[in-house]
Image (cartoon, rainbow, N blue to C red; front, side, top):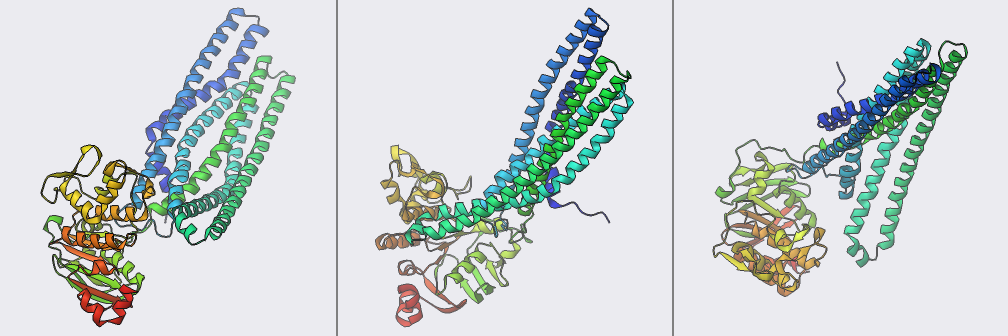
Length: 587
């Protein structure tokens, strides 16, 4: 049975194969360039034979004109071959980056598991670039092969011995170069892995810089980065030593081979077997061969690094999804969702047999004595994972029978730590609104931005409910104020309110909100609680929070303790009757 190709090799050839046209064009032009380069010493030898040995001045001028024409041709061939190669390399890397981003953002998830964001960034940049560079390496390989073949044919015409020496010796050198590239391939993979880890840790530390300073953990963070950075440096040095060792040994072997060709050619000339012009051509061809052979050393290094990077890319692209990508039943149209949410014996992580029935249009609070219970519940509701046992049903349909996109179009989970994106405040608020979606609440448009810019009424309602209207008034350009990546130009409370406005503006049939007001003052928290109640009136809303202000506006509250439903009732009654509830929400 034929052994299956490694996933990395499949990624490598798919990336290069997608640029087949540019690779073929670059290879043809590159072969023309190398053919011209190989013909230069041949033409010089012919010019010497005609002009110096035979004294034929017109013949000398003719061959000099041919030589000039060859120089012009090889110059243009090199230019356009290099252009085609660069285009193929850059485009292949771009397509790989697009595929990686698509896989990381795929509804089924799973690609990001066990990897820091910085590590994924490194794979999508450096590894994709190295795989793309294989396209250029293949073009150079075809061109170098053409140069060697033309040189061998020319040497065969001069001397059968010289021609056979090149034809037999070149494959041997290439095979030795391939063997020497194996340690480099292994160490290159380790190098990229360590570099990705260092990049991931650095991005993680920068993202949490304020928290680190707040708890005085700067020294521990520096020590952590120093360790991974030193590991990355050590791996890079090992890869560099392997590459230097490979290049050095290949250079020695190549030099010895060229010296052997020159020695044999010199002895043939001394015996009179070849003429002066043929000797000049032979020596010139021997010197020319150094170029293609050196390029093969570079090609082997590029292929080794490309294979290692392709294997890392394949790990991400082939990562199993956290949930199936497609459902097994017909999708539930978001417009037809009634909003009944039912949990039946839900078991996942710390959750143990949770039963909960939420009626359409009901606002329910979920308080937990352990944050892990809330995290597990949110993962199941958002279908970032499927339960170990039991079901989550929407209008009687098990979520596991629906595709992730269908679930999230009907049931939106707004995480506590949701990030903002680079753009304006308004861009972030409207980011979750599907193109062509209805405008939501009636009333036309309202002006909450600088310069009289109109904002749709349902978006304005979401901003007022979340307190984002206050944020906008405090900013220089209102809702059109630019926001930096991850919202770092805003305070924690401002970011939280904008993220909540985004969730409310999406106007999902079922909305699950996790701790939306932990970074605001008590007055703003109370206003947000009332705003959520008003703007979500008539639609199913689940508030996963321990905030008394938010729980007070719900129709009822469910208390989760040790993964089970411990109590159910309205907020006021639970506060008066249950000490464990008071501990959870008032402590």
